[in-house]
Length: 157
Image (tube, rainbow, N blue to C red; front, side, top):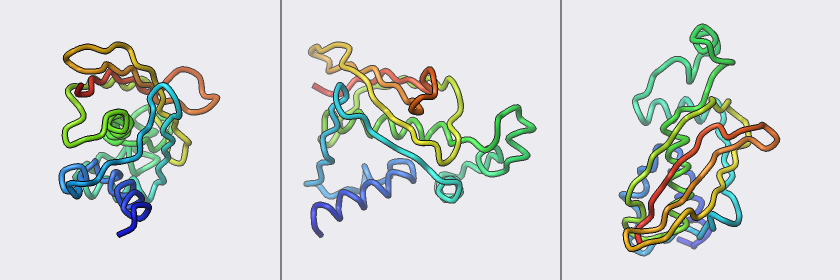
């Protein structure tokens, strides 16, 4: 398998909750994503949300049914919070690739992300120490105001 094909296969499998991370080849190392440099860009369609819901067993109607989401006080169908968290973890793992790149994480969901919206995950290195490197990440929609979600992630040294 070519490196490019392996990379895109890994990216596609990330949509099902990062399952690939546990079944990846031993020599797989995703491309570096400098947290303080190039941001990670993601988007998900409603069809992909349906597949994610089936794969994860999350059948909450706010992720699939517009009327149910509106009845819950949301602007419409919204992206799964755990999928957003997986995107944060993917960005952090690219900062420090390897078999066990993440030491700990805290994610705060502030506003919902709508399907098909272009999301950008960027951040900065908040500190370095013997216990690892602390990253402060934010998920934003370009031109959309404050972050939709934020994360504090510690990657292994």
